[in-house]
Image (cartoon, rainbow, N blue to C red):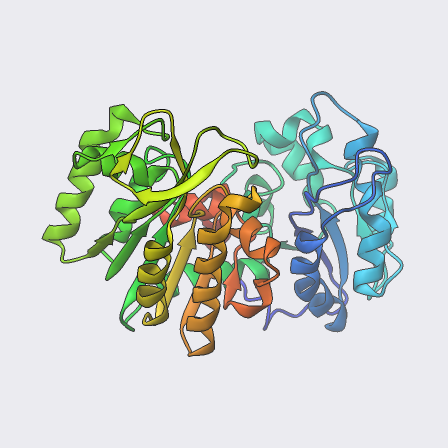
Length: 398
């Protein structure tokens, strides 16, 4: 395994796997959010500045069978050129003789993008032949696609074996790994994790792992009502996983045994239906009447969460506190975001990981006011769970 900082790129072609799976306008096919492209700019520019050329490969969307115009990476060439300040070339496919000729003739400082790798069956199947064909484009392989590092696909994992002495992580993946390590291996205290979202079932492994690391664990979102019901509270028509009440009680017991402050909200904003136009009011979280459902945390809970967060040295946020997509039920999530920003200003390290948390921090325009915003949804969750991600393992293996 090489290091991108010290590797000699001069005169070499760097095949880089990025995650340019960006949202596009359905009518015009224009990019509506270029965050993922901007996240890879640092690695690409570094290679160019060191005298190398760059061949970019990525997926876009979920094409069902072969080429689909709306999923063509041709749609992102113009914006990529603007961000890099380079006239980016485009290969209409991944593995034809013409595409190989294009990459073979690239000069130092030049960039080209291969067509969507998921137009080929060999990509998601992880076939060695497709990976071998892709490998012909480069002298070195750089994996900078953390968002797909949990997939054992040809372009994310299998291709690495064709670069036994010339493979490395890009700056983005390096920073993702360092950020998670800062949380899970922190010597600074207190460490606080805010874990929200709809279901306990999707966060069990993460919560149990965090109990060995954190000093405070704040539970929010829909999963909070499962914990409340598990301890005898009345939650009305709120989202509850009845099959996981014993799991919730076990987590509560584990937290006590490990001396972790497990914070469950004390009040909630309830509504008479799942709609922004619903009637709503604030009540104690364990006294929700029938016909009403909890959609956000209440004011007292916001204050108590703020005190915990703003006195923390390390913070992980994974999952919203309520239905932040609706303006009447966004306050809990928004205030948690501002508390994290305040803690960061005071010197805390803050990691925002998981799709909805990232969506929330972006909605409130606070992404540049926290320490690190992860680009990996599913990959970040699996990494936090302690799973070995295939894309990361493939680079580390000798």
